[in-house]
Image (cartoon, rainbow, N blue to C red; front, side):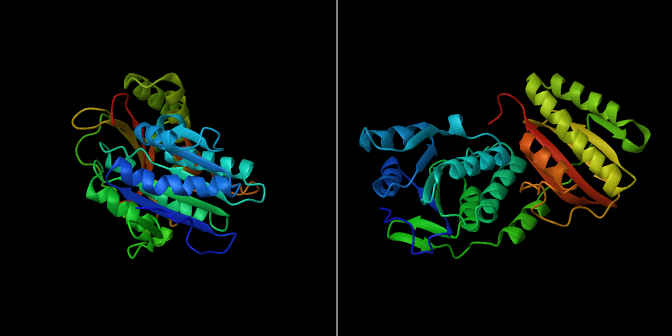
Length: 323
C-alpha cells in the first residue's frame, strides 16, 4: 500500500480519507509518503496516532523532518474539543499553504453512545473543514476495531486509502443524513433510574447540586464534575425554555453493565430538528445555539432523540477505568 498524495482537487478544497490498515507495515506504507510529500512541499504536517504507529513512523522519518508528532493520548480529548484543537492548529499553521493531518480517533468500544459521538465527529469534519486547503487521513486498525466502526469509516469519509491508491467510498453519506441516522439509533433507556426528578417542581440550582453529587459519587475528578454540572444545566435550561412540560431529569449510574454516568433530560417539545445541533461553534452574534455546543464541548457524548410524548437529550461521561 502506498499513498500518492491527495487526489486531484481544487487548491482550497478539503480532502478527507480513511486509512483502514491491517498491519504496521500497511500503516507506514500509506502514512510515510503522505508525510514526506507534505514536508518536501513545505506543507505543515501534524500526526496524532497510536504510540506504536508513531514509533514506526518516527523510525523511518528523517531526524530533521518538519512534522509535529503526537500520540493519541497527547492529542485527543472528547470529539468536540478535539475538532476544535485540529481547527486551531490548522488556522495557526497554514499561512497560505495546504495542511496535512493524520488523526486516529480513540474509539471507546465499551460505549455505543460514545462510539456514535466519534462517528458524528468524523462526519461533521466534512462540514467543519469544508473549503479549507486541508488533507486529513484518519487511520482505522482493522485488527481491533469491529465491523460496525469500519462501516462508520466508509460512511464518513468520501475517500478510502486502498492498496491500489485512493478510491472514492461508495458508501459515503451526507453528514446531515448520517448524523440524523446516528441520532435515531440512540436507545430510550428502560427500567428504573438511580435518580429521577420533575424539572417543573425543582429549582435549577437543585438540579446543579443533584448533578454535582451524582458525578462526584461516581468517582469523577473535580474538573469533570464541574464540566457535567455546566453541561446538564445548559440542557435542562433548554428543556424548560424551549421544550416545555412535562420535563424531567433521570440519572443512570455506573453498574448493571454501565461504564459511564448518564444524565437524561426529557421534555414535552418537538425536539431538535437540526441533526448537527451543537456540533459547530455558533456565530458570536447569535443568542441561541450555545447550550448544546457547550454540552458537547464538556461531555463525552450528547445524544438527541425522540421519546414518547416529546424529546430527550442525554449527557454521557465515562467513568474512570472504562474503555
